[in-house]
Amino acid sequence: MKKLGIMGLVSCCIVGLLGVAAAAEVTWQDIGGGNTSIKAVLVHPQDPRIIYIGSSSGVLKSEDSGKAWRSVLTVGGQNRAVNFLGFGLNADSIYAATSAGLYYSANNGKNWKRIFQGKNNLEKECSVVASLPYGIILGTKAGLFLSTDRGRSWHKARASLGSSHILAIACYPKEADSLYVACVDGVFRSSDQGQNWEKIFVARPTEDGLNEDEAIEDQDEEERFSQIRYLCIDPQDPDILYLATEKGVYISQDKGKSWKAMPSFGLLKRQVKFLLVLSKSDIYAVNRSGIFQYNQDRWEELSLGLAVNEVRFLSLDKQNSLYAATEKGLFKAEAKVYANSKQSRLVIYPKNEPDIKKVQQAAIRYAEVGPEKIIKWRKQAAKKAWLPKVSASLNRDIADLWHWESGSTTKAEDDALRRGHDAIGWDVSLSWDLGELIWNQDQTSIDVRSKLMVQLRGDILDEVTKLYFERLRLKIELDNIPIGDNKKIAEKELRIEELTASLDALSGGYFSSTMSNPA
Image (cartoon, rainbow, N blue to C red; front, side):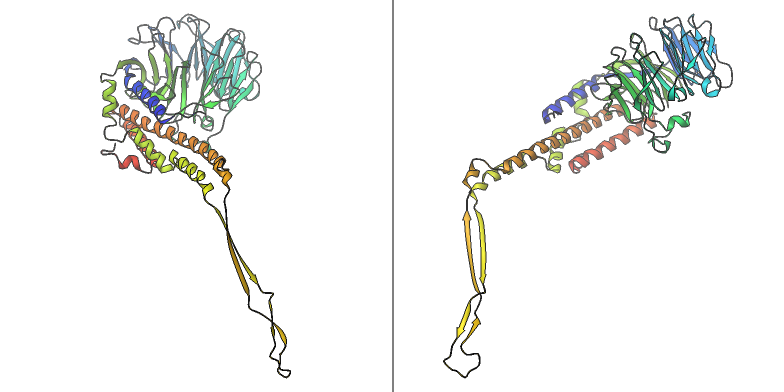
């Protein structure tokens, strides 16, 4: 992987920050007409004035962009919630997946007919539906069902899809082999119009069914033990899939054969529960913190002015108006350009903090990965040939014999050989290998260490730069949150403190120590 230099990283992140400053400041308008607990929204593809919403009791329709609403379907029974709305093969036909079965209307919601009821409560709980040229695919809490005769008869899918809680269906109508289903057990793909299925993503259960954040109150116990939440396909490229999980968003560019995690910078919480994909450059995600749009390898929050606790569904009309179905009603997004100039944004927010170059230099010093270390090693290795190799030796001779003769024949031990004193000798030698003036074997080791140090330095600079500008972006977002939204303010402030601690950890406390007015 190629690493950007310091100037390259700074330039890229400044461009990204300018994009944040110049991006649309999204405002939200309540168009739900007092209807609450909205789980699904469906906007007419040709006429955005026609909107359908699924509530806790049925389906409502508006023909004037949400100014007035009327009920077009009232679901009977104890469980009457509408969980999903979808068009059929044309905009006149509508499917409503409810907690009491699947309903169908062929005339724009004027008349409805229940075409699937289920044999038990779990089968009645319909979660998602897709209408394809070769049949209807229905997902329930008790498995996947298929109908090839417009709902007159239904067949249950084989293997685990026949009993698992279905979460999402993704399909590309123009290609028969592009049919995907996400359930709590994993992601499955069919190449023969739903007759057979192969698993392409394995669900990893969350530990003890608990997530980092509080569990959703109406979430099923079975769903809590799975990390999968939603699946969608790129409408412009059937090879690309997007998967929302408890650990972030995953992408596959080869029809599910391989997956990789998308960057999570900008997401306050990685638990993504819904995705809306229009193209590679137009991706929206929903988590417990709000609505986010993917832009240049990072996520930008769009729900700063949306005072709701839970976003359940997103939709976009042909005029690029964004609709959010929430527990407090239906909201429509409008955009306004920031009034302040780009330059003023870059001057105000980092005013009392060290600039990015100083933080990067502090991080390099703290990690001891500066280029001067390698330069010093190379110079020292080049001088090595001028230094001699010194060797010293010490010898001790204990084999000498001494002869003692006094000339007497009567004295004891006269004329005898005796061991003499130890003979100790030493020497010192010096030698030079002048060939090292041309080539030193230590250079090879230095080259390896230099390569590793460059990679480590690049990783550190990359991390510091992302954290620095992520913190700066959050400060901008914090100023645009309504004063009364204390929960959102607390989340942003907590995330800023977390990023500050991370920058201190990478720079040895330099970042906080040089802030004249810490945020």
